[in-house]
Amino acid sequence: MPELKDSQTAFALDFGGGATVPLRARWGVRGDLRALVAFPASDAPGLSTGGTADPIWMERVTVGLDYRF
Figure 1: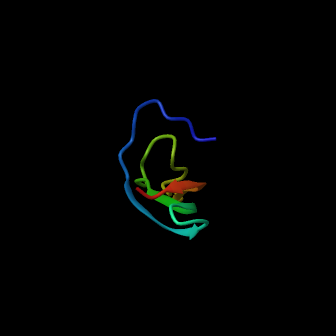
Figure 2 (figure 1 turned 45 degrees about the horizontal axis):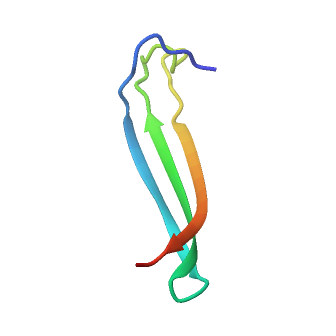
């Protein structure tokens, strides 16, 4: 596991999508998928080895109820 002594700043992209399925007139089920990919610098301590660094991917899935006002 990478270990950081100081915070690092990296270029990153955040993207995703979602959908709602209606259950009744005001109620529905909502699902979302989000992904974040960060591109650390090749010389980032704790994130690179041998002068190269791999992209860091993080995904998140959420499901919940929604209520339309």
